[in-house]
Image 1 (tube, rainbow, N blue to C red):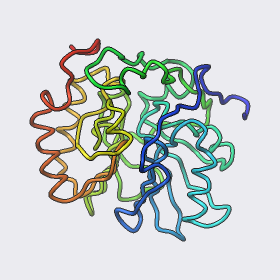
Image 2 (image 1 turned 120 degrees about the vertical axis):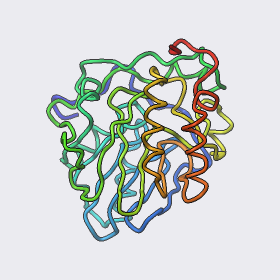
Image 3 (image 1 turned 90 degrees about the vertical axis):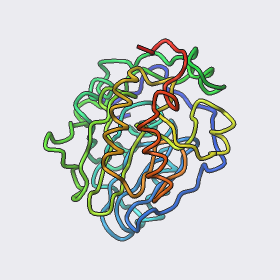
Length: 280
């Protein structure tokens, strides 16, 4: 690996997958999502034009992501930037290999930078939290920071998103302190990251089948439930028309508006677990 960049010592392949792995679709002509094992990445940009990659998938998925981008945008193409919703292992799993291959900048919220520059580990996953088998296996998930050295920069403080005119970033903490979502006012497209998801991420069967059910962020890696609820309220107030989430199938139209309104209203009943070590 390039000098100055490294993964944590707990970095490893995670043996988890879903029926949707290896598939994707457009929700707009310039917004494409793709599922890598159990997590989604997004490509923003029409085929034949410049593009940006949002998030970087699971560990050891770099070849898959490079192949995907070349199939959509042409051989030897590269994004203008990689922009992160946050730095959990399943959103930065191929990041160093992609930066080395493409030589492109990376952007994240300034509160997320300690987790991306080797300075701070994430809180330990909560295997005791209410939920199913994924929650129970969460202690195997990497939490040590990756170190991008000087290859990562903070998102602009004015809310603009580098190389994505029309989008703005929105601070949506709770799942992580520097978690952000991306919203385009012109057509209501929301890239939500893990601020909310459309699958009950704690339950192995639902993750495998990708059974659609709007929910809060993954419980086993969410340390601040008050902030997470406020973030969902903030996103619901935008009245998005379509949402790509970090886990699960995209959701649009009336199905999105009704379910997101319900989640914002009843977050304490739907999302917040009945027990777990990170409950306030």
